[in-house]
Length: 489
Image (cartoon, rainbow, N blue to C red; front, top):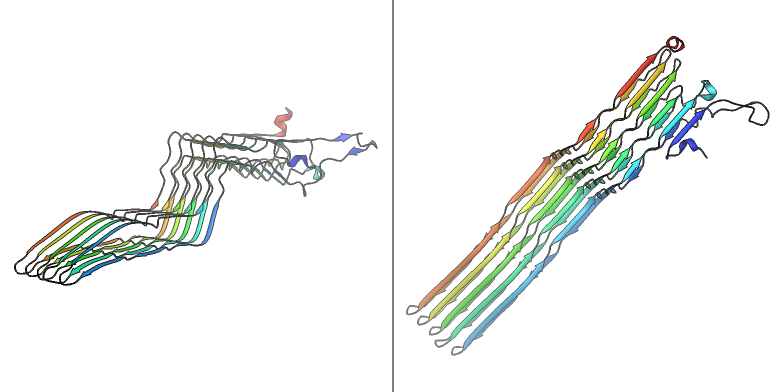
């Protein structure tokens, strides 16, 4: 078992051993650098939301047609009566969700193991730390998963509702009466969500393990790159289409003969809901009270090759909002046609009465959001680890030391390229007619209580707001270069 590759804390102590191999000869040191050039105690995860991937087509296309016909006819001396009462509820509501990242959990800890390495002497046979990589960072805790969507979501409902009520009495002594009552509820509302990043959790900790080495050097030492409570990115590429159509045209007619009485009564109580919520390519919000901290690095080197090529303890992020990317189109194209007609016709010595009452609520509102960055959380901390570097001899040093580039509570970026279309059309044309003969009385009554909502909220390419009370700090670096002569004096 290679104990120096475990992730729960590593201490490597390398020194020569004599007289302990059973033959009085020097015991071999650690193996050479080729198979053991990497030590990794990081890349741990706790409580992270899973990523969501969708690449195809999701279609919901119900069609409802309801067309009752009520007719009554009487002879010359007869009396006719037609009553139609319709109580109809059609639910074509749809919720379509695809490519959604899971939310991050709360109070999780992901920590890289500490690494302690000591090499007492140099040489090709004992330089296994001289050209490798030490990594105790890149730990994640409570981050929201990314959401990816590539394709289309379509909701294409259609309703045709056309009751007709007719009563006809032909004759000089006849009476015709037609009564129609419609209580109708159409629900074609839609919620379409695609490519949404999950929200980051709260109270999570992701920290890189500390590294303390004394050897001939290492190419890369990485204890940073930790993340906690960040919102996932949302990526959307495709189309969201919501296109409900409602056609509603009841007709109420009463016709009486020359001496008859005609009465037509129509009452319409209609609720049509074509509201749509379309959300695509939205980053998750960052959590609160998270900490992402890079591990501390302490190095001691001697000789001309001492030092590491790169030391990185920064790049940690906590409570940042995810970025939102949307490429495509969001279309809400509702169409509602409502045209009741109420007619009463009586003969030349008759009385005609037409009454129409319309109580209509039509909601074609829409809320469209695309390419919106998540909001940053509050009370988060992102810090780079401190670096303490002591070199002796000539040529010591490091090509790059990075303890910064930390972020906490930042709002995500919003990117949008495409179109947002809200194309609602409502046609409302009730007609109320009463016709009487030359010696008759005609009355027409029409009452309209209509509410039509075609409001729209369209948001695209909006960056998220930053949080409050966050701290992002780079780690401190202390470097001491000492010559061998100074050490000997």
